[in-house]
Length: 335
Image (cartoon, rainbow, N blue to C red):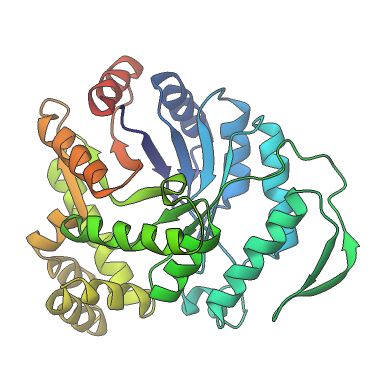
């Protein structure tokens, strides 16, 4: 069975709307399964997804991720329901909790209780997309006026993926979501983690194989391998040292405590370069695989290992603008 490849688009930097449209068209024609747009405190995901939906025909589109502090669940139901109509049923909802820093110091919303908030967001979004009157009595949301969306949704359920790390949030995801975004799990432990996740889903009375799992790391194809590895190391160092405690706790849980300690020490000294250098080769190799377009055999082996571990969606980053060359790489990696 062919691997399902996904590509992500970042949220930082100067916008290149024309480039996004062109790249999305290339992905669409090449047979990429889905394109995911991130959102943190940069560009919003929904405006960019509108462009993608308008200029593509087959590729599924999703948020990787939007957090549950930046908008209400009702607003998310409006956004996702509208985009599902615009894309003719290609939308995937990707939610996460973000960190306390972002929730409290960018959105001004108290962070806790994150798991309860996620549960109620999933419930409310599902109710509104299904066309049910919104009468909901939760711990955080008490909604009793019976509002419904003032339009007919294309589907009565839009798949919801959740980015989850700590055990309680992973448990919630296995019980209620349609897909899981694992975070900072090394390849050598991925099979174990996915096995535990599917066991929770089975215990909840669900078909565990009906829940998609995206790989936590990427396979990157580029002619500048060192730059890509450095950028990935920089991202790992930033999240481990600057985005609260969840990421550092997760990495420590999976055996990278020494690296995390050095990363935090470097950030305390305001030395970003030293923080990136503290990401060991072992840590980087467990989290990503980088190769050139001329040497894809190792990338195919990596994808096969991820599939064997239980992943159903595979994150790739293909740095190639030529449509024919891009399509050739996709064909090589998909098989």
